[in-house]
Length: 497
Image (tube, rainbow, N blue to C red; front, side, top):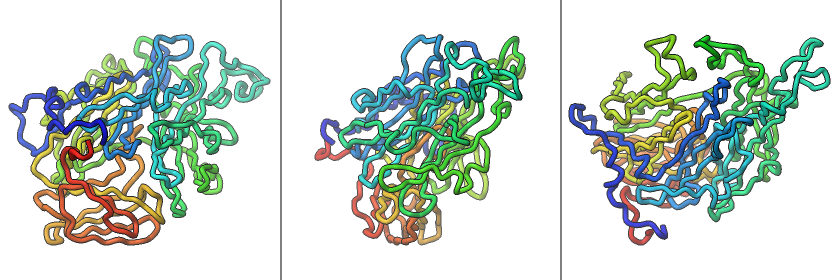
């Protein structure tokens, strides 16, 4: 890649690693590389004392290779100050992976400084038109105006109830549109939301609060469709008083009516159609969040990372054993149906209490071990580098032809150790609350130096088989054509600098 220097074996990225004394050897370890990597991001929840529910939701994050240079870039989603309480300007941030352990903020250069992206939480990327370029979808809330918003009225829909003027509900407020940005292929994006028919999720013809989104091929036509998660029916001027902590507290989401979700069918021409009703999606109400599963030590067993927190910032005053900021949890899979909680063994920096929200994983430095990105509510983002160990791994990047280009929905089976060790994974779009992990499958092989066999069941129904695939590399498999390229683990070659 032009302008990228030889990989420096990460000496600066190890600067914030906590001392290892007193901790058992696990064969892998995470270290905080946020600052040396160049991530200077602060989430703005907009909190000013009003105790509004969206303030508790946090910041979204995503790993993606938006410029197709082979290195995972980072997108961080932000909120903003409430109207009438403005202190500073905040926006989402796109960080370009320089290929040397550092990242550069390219938000403005990429055309993503959009004033309309305000109360955003979720995001997802999609190669929607088979051109090899990842487009960006951002979920927004409503255009909440605490000063000039609609008032109780018999003439305004959703501002009256059973013949009486009442505080207006969210359905009576103008929505902030969802955003779809087309990747122009030159490092910039263009807003094509209206053209694509994605200006806002609807319920009975009215706008809803969208919190997250994901892509999948629900009808197996080879095109990725969009599923939008809508949260709750919430209004800052019509929220119940909760907790009673010497004043107003944050109400649990169960205090508010749920909303239905929205399914958009990909029409194959750059546009989408809302098919929620005809598919039965709009008949069901609910709320959705999640955790991140990945094999962090490459032993062949999927581990669990959970980003923890509490929504009430004064919870300690009534529940002494519960705290607002809480440590995340890393559960190591021991096999045989057993897990071991190893957070403390990662060191005090990794185990420090945080008001965590989003969590995603990717191999940011091409060493074959998965690194972790964590966002916090009204706080910074944290990037943890996986120090790795001695176990081997094989990474698969899938390229569909009959199936969607990213291969989302493909099921891959890998056997190793003379066909004794068997594991499988499905390539998914999104796996954690507010987050998108990389679209590359990493298979930990333990002490084995090759995969005896690899079977790929593509969404189109086609089955592809590979044999004797060496570990220590990322292979690109194209549907129907087998392995079309391979890249060994390690720094970029001098020819790609």
